[in-house]
Image (cartoon, rainbow, N blue to C red; front, side, top):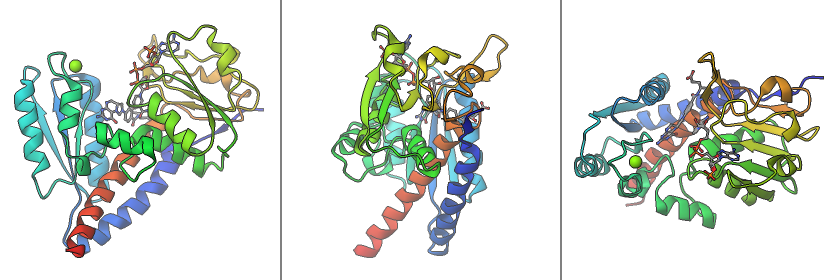
Length: 288
Ligand SMILES: NC(=O)C1=CN([C@@H]2O[C@H](COP(=O)(O)OP(=O)(O)OC[C@H]3O[C@@H](n4cnc5c(N)ncnc54)[C@H](OP(=O)(O)O)[C@@H]3O)[C@@H](O)[C@H]2O)C=CC1
Ligand SMILES: Nc1nc(=O)c2c([nH]1)NC[C@@H]1CN(c3ccc(C(=O)N[C@@H](CCC(=O)O)C(=O)O)cc3)C=[N+]21
Ligand SMILES: [Mg+2]
């Protein structure tokens, strides 16, 4: 029997519809949610993602502005651009597309984004609040994965979640969100010996490695829920995940495809966070 497919495009669309309604209500009150996307350099993949994000904003009536800076932009001038966006009334969310050119310190750049506009949830204050379980913008990819699990009726409490990967933007926050929902969490990474001995224990397996078709049937327990965060190109330049879908299909109870799994959810949660940022501002005005 084949595994149930978790359809991120469909679940994402359902959430986008409710976000679109919130946009309509905000506009009736004279406020159009605005997202600024900062793109430095001419990384081809980044340009594609950014276009995708902008199209998605427009589709639900949000304002989006692309700030496109040349590869040789200095850190100082990038920081100045972010300060301008921090102070703009029409911009509620700021996203600085990663990776940045090597001569720029990403940590400093991200820390400069005003926390109330940090819709990626990457700044140190946002991360700290997330760790403490305080209200904040959650990082879009792990947040999107939590929504996929929720909409698919997958129970998390008491389950063993194994994360492959510990990056600051995916693996590490993913484990935190699952822990908050009472999973038992194991982190694995490039220094983990005998990886399958860990992943085989997973009730929920999250692959965030960045290697095409890396997770095979030897890594997966019968009946596990497998979430594939990876976005890679295979030897034929075809988009593929970190999970060898054909091998794992039929072993997993549920699996996310690539494309059409986690990717669309990342953008959905970016829209969600940006609308929330605009609503927060409105509530603030009403309170004054
Ligand atoms: N769908 C979406 O919306 C998004 C998808 N992505 C995709 O997800 C994937 C991961 O992204 P990201 O977290 O940014 O990547 P990083 O390269 O920052 O992190 C990769 C992680 O995988 C670990 N790793 C690498 N090789 C192995 C191995 N052989 N065994 C076990 N662990 C290993 C690394 O370990 P160590 O820490 O020891 O180096 C690291 O923690 C990529 O394909 C990326 O394109 C990313 C963001 C959003
Ligand atoms: N500051 C910042 N925030 C990010 O959220 C961020 C980033 N930098 N840098 C790059 C990664 C990657 N990322 C993706 C988003 C959507 C898809 C997506 O929509 N994928 C589609 C397919 C897209 C295609 O066809 O190429 C899918 O999986 O179905 C993929 C990857 C966000 N990232
Ligand atoms: Mg850098």
